[in-house]
Length: 83
Image (cartoon, rainbow, N blue to C red; front, side, top):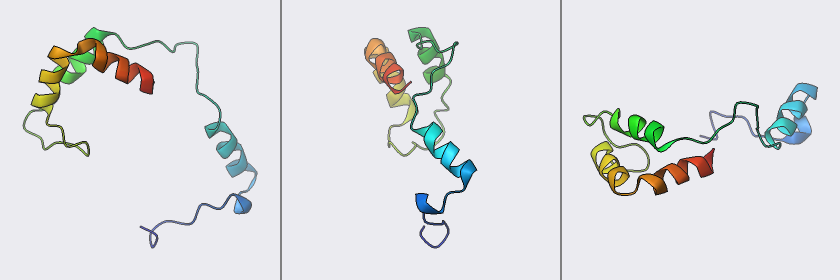
């Protein structure tokens, strides 16, 4: 990966890059921020394609769907924590 990406050195930042770097340090809150509802997460989990390979987490969609059926509040809280 080092061969394909530049080193991130803040000393080389121009004004634009300094602004972007500063913005990433600020929490992102907007007027329309709201927590996910259990129904929204449930719909998203149900729409996952069971025929695709698991993602980086290694959890297959059918297993994730089963876990959501058992722990819907916990899964929703996890997503809201990330939000």
